[in-house]
Length: 300
Image (tube, rainbow, N blue to C red):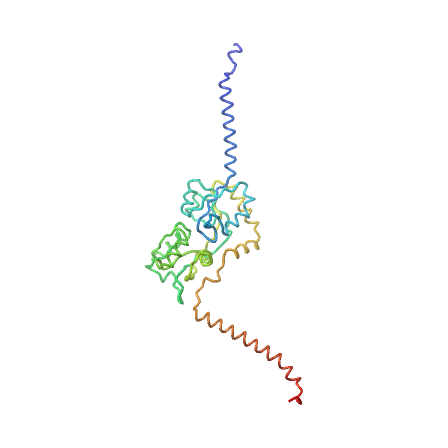
């Protein structure tokens, strides 16, 4: 057999070389893609995550994510803010890697895995201000708003079927309906109504009832991204209790959520004023008493 018969064809050699280059390029591209973590923030779920009028994403969950970011093992890509229903649809299609401020549900667990909770807040019924706030049992046959796709929606529809539930895109939409009198209540977490009263102009509402449902909020990630989940959980465990409390105090204020009759407010302030005056008079009297005792009677 001649040497010419076994010499490889140069065209085959070049094809193999280019194929090798293409495979290597694909591996590099895949590695780069694997290190990009696509985070999908909600556009209107304050105080946990929301977009400001200028488009800046902010909130308690965003602050927590910033603490975790150096330990995630990849570059965090902030996707455009959207409502939760759209984000979950995108996550189901594999277009999102990381979501914040979520409560695990069986439906979501089909395509997402969850970290340990990093904040827990109760769900509440928000109603118009008044001396006798109704509870959900009082609103049978009446309209109450709840966030579409929120974990609490399934809970309230199951346990309170007598209510006419109105699904809204976010809590703020529900609060606006309540202020306009188009619904008789809103079910939301206590932190959301606190933030709405502080920053979004929500007035004339109060918490009527705390529901037997707790928002134990976690980060959610695509089920196949197990390394990301491990990194998130490890970093969350290292956040100190003092840091957690500081974040809660920064974003959540529940002091103004209950109704107070204006007459009671006036009476309490009047009582405080009278108490202050009484203490002041007592101090003046005690200051004058030694002077009266030392006064020379012959000076009269």
